[in-house]
Amino acid sequence: MATQYLDFGSKYKREFQKAESDLDYIQYRLEYEIKTNHPDSAGEKNPVTLLKELSAIKSRYQTLYARFKPVAVEQKETKNRICATVNKTMNVIQNLQKQTALELSPLTDEEKTVADQLKSHMPDL
Image 1 (cartoon, one colour):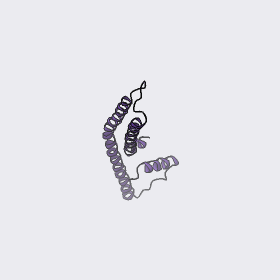
Image 2 (cartoon, rainbow, N blue to C red; image 1 turned 90 degrees about the horizontal axis):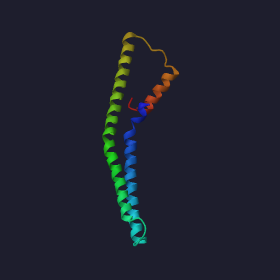
Image 3 (tube, rainbow, N blue to C red; image 1 turned 135 degrees about the horizontal axis):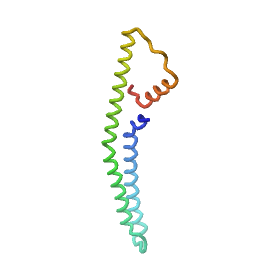
Image 4 (spheres, rainbow, N blue to C red; image 1 turned 180 degrees about the vertical axis):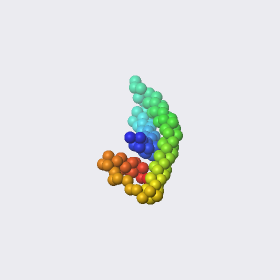
């Protein structure tokens, strides 16, 4: 289950960038619409206030992304360490098999499933 979070960084980085871009576009469109269609919108909530609220939301997204970035870096490093450890372990097992002339019994269905899942989440293995 932990492996599903290993690619968290790149996926959510793109989503944050897209959200930021979308917010920029919405702000631009709102400013344009207000200037062209509602120059004097009396009795309604001030459009400038709405734009400031939009800017505040964008700022919160940027803050969240800044907090998230170190987590993504750490997850990538952790994934690399896990892959290196698994590869070393596999090499040690293979060397022991060669030195002792022993072969392991075939993997059970459950072991095959786990191995396939591990390989799908960690193609570096």
